[in-house]
Each structure stands twice: as C-alpha cells, then as structure tokens.
Image 1 (tube, rainbow, N blue to C red):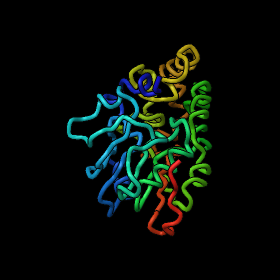
Image 2 (cartoon, rainbow, N blue to C red):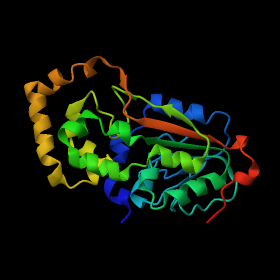
Image 3 (cartoon, rainbow, N blue to C red):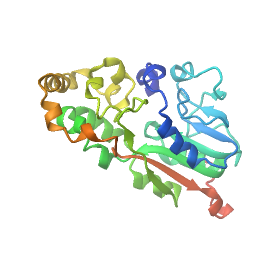
Length: 258
C-alpha cells in the first residue's frame, strides 16, 4: 500500500501552503519557465508554471484542485518524462517516502535542463524539537527512519545551495513542526493524521505522551518550560531548501537513466 493512501487522507484540510514558505520556493525557481512536480501530492506549493505533476497515490491525486497541473500516476524512480524536458524538477517534502532515493534523484536530474529544487528537513536539527524530545519519542524514531540525511542529498545532487526555511509561529501548512508555538494542535487527531511521523506510528505508542502533553498544557507546565518560545515569530526546526543549478555543470554530467 502506498504510504500516502494511509497518511494523506486529511491533506486537503490540514496541509494548506503557507505564503512565506511558498515565497522561498518561488524565489528558488525564479526565471524558470516549465516545472515538473515530483511526488506532487495535493499540489501544495506547486508553481503556476508546472506542466506535469507526478504522484503515485490516488488518494492524494483525488484531493488536487481542478485547476492544478495534470497529474500522472507514477513514482519518482521511473518518471514518464523525457530527457531535459522541463526547466526544473521539484520535490517538496516527499523524497523521504521514495523507495530508491538514488534512482529518484537521478531521474530528477535527467529530466531537468536548468534546476533541481528539493524541500526537506535536517533530522539532526528536528530531533531536538520539544514535542519529540519531551513527549513523543516513538514519533521521533519514525521521523528518524523517514529522514533523508542532507549529506546524502548533496552527494547525489552535487554542488547545491542550502537555504534555511524557518517555520512561522502561525504556519498555515500543518507539517510536523508547524505547531511549535501552538501545542494544543498536536492533540487534534485530524492534525496528526496529516503528519507522516504520527500517521505512520502506532497510536498506542503515542497515547501516553499525548496525555502528558495535555496535562502539561492544562496545568501551565508547558508554557512555563517553554516561555522563551512564546516570544519568537519563527523557529529553525531544520527545514531546508536545496537548489542544484544545472546550468553551471557540463552537459556530460547529466544523470543517465537507469
């Protein structure tokens, strides 16, 4: 079963694109005319000049808007797109679900003429998140298994620029770290259903930690312990945007198809 057939059922409700994060992604695509969105999901952050979206989960495809780019049901490891067919290929919070990362990145490099853009997270930073460290170690274990090391992506992409993408305190996109200053949201089952590290962790392993979080919120213990967070407008939780500029590479370095 495709993971997002299980973990993506609430995406259209809980995973709305945040305009500040969208601006960072669009800046990375400045000057690009055509885009292929790989692991496109419901189309969050999908640029208006996307000409094709690739997504394996029918559950996710059904949640795409009517005006979104045409979606092809396929996987990153075998893209139904020709050599250098688009200016840029993008993968936004998706590479951690691929069955063969090496093949997926090679395909992204193969289809793009100018740029490859990947939005992901650095688990060495994210595992220090208070939610995982203090309350939900089982979710932290799931996240660690899912995470793709930044060093691995760099080794596959070659020379890249890496930009920190801080999470706003009122982030509209309900990914794992979105509610760092709004902890009550993590008690909402619908919110958790749209976050992979929760959806893919047995509920029985989360219940005790969630009960402690609820109690600490009710008593004020959480607010006292994390009073410093309540004054911050944004927080670095490890989210990173990687950009590989293919125009700076010799043509011979284009990745061959497997």
